[in-house]
Image 1: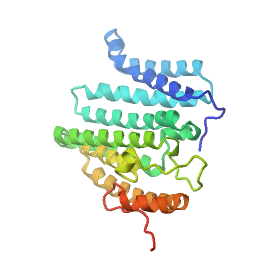
Image 2 (image 1 turned 60 degrees about the horizontal axis):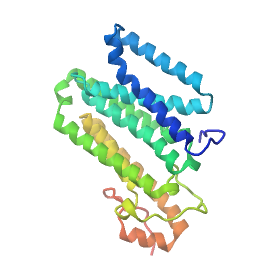
Image 3 (image 1 turned 180 degrees about the vertical axis):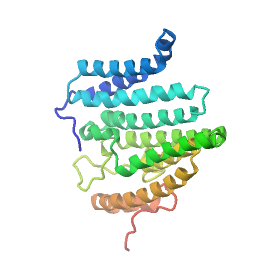
Image 4 (image 1 turned 90 degrees about the horizontal axis):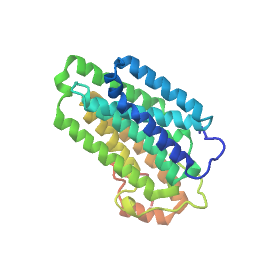
Length: 284
């Protein structure tokens, strides 16, 4: 895990990331600059250079490493908003950019607020895995090719709105799970029980045993429905389902080891929340 080096005062990483995310999102003001006489590409290049120079002046490592990531995500969010309100065939891709950047930023922000002891640069999940990166690139390529050769298939508004609703539902459920679990939530499956580790069964955990996975599952599929990507939509559904099936089995082995009969009783009462995934099988 890439750590944040010397521990800053409580809450400082959350405030820093939020401030720099909003700084990056200020790209929304770029149309005002272009109306003032700057050409679009020139204005964008100057804006990006100015943001980076400002961050270099304000922060030193490791805070700069937090700031540049949060600012980048804010910049992507701002660009996504501009694209969303444009009259181009890329407007739905703007929705996707906003969804993607908010997801990664909020993973870090909620961890910084909720469980700062486990916070690191990896909490942004920008370097989640090679497979995650390939999946994202594949979805961009499919949307781009479809928009070039079959643009009418990328303008099915009701389908994109359905995908957006899936994304919103998934994001809200995942963040609710993170807040409910508090310091018990960690991006890495824990193999050793800490002194503060407790079994959470209230809130959204009374609905599903793994609400954060349920949220991420529907969020990821929703992004492809939003983009009207049939190939990646199917591939995402199959790949993410298999990933969470294996992940839940691995995690539940640890949870049974941590909490024993208490978790087994909880497992009997509450479903995983994911279709056709029942979790680890326990021999009677």
